[in-house]
Amino acid sequence: MTKPLTTRAKAKKTNTKRNAPPSQPDYSSPELRLTISIVRTGRIWRSLLDEHLRKIGQSASRMEAMATILSSPPSTTQIQIAKRIGIEGPTLTRTLDMLEADGLVERLADPSDRRNKHLRLTAEGINILDEIMTITSELRSRLLQDIPAGDIDKTSKLLELIQDRLESGLPPETA
Image 1 (cartoon, rainbow, N blue to C red):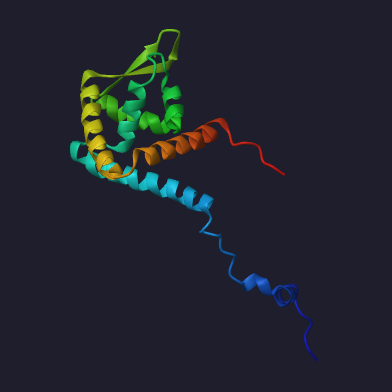
Image 2 (image 1 turned 45 degrees about the vertical axis):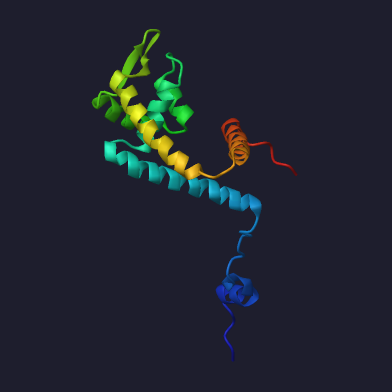
């Protein structure tokens, strides 16, 4: 006499797809290739910058913080700087602590709300940022060498559109 099948055995017998490999995404899709390229390009570029900036005791994250501070209005708070960069406040705080300890950034009390801090680069911070930008410009020049200006402009506009959509919220889902 045969034993009755257990629930697991029944499921295994009736569901042969369970052991089949999951379906693979279509990696030839232009949209998926673009998504993967954006992520990989950012990661590789940041790694290259860090490698070169490390020689002068700096990093891409320090560059990003200092450049954002310099290009922001004087009354911009630390929280607003973090949002502009797209990072959490505590992450920026750690970077700012190091920049302040190195004499590159000053935190200034907000006269209307002492809980808020305004940020300003020191003269030394501006000098270091200039040095960082010289290194970055040389790398960028080599990277974009022989790429037509029109291609760079189109790509830049597409990436700006994507960034705007990410920052303002994706368009609504379509049914």
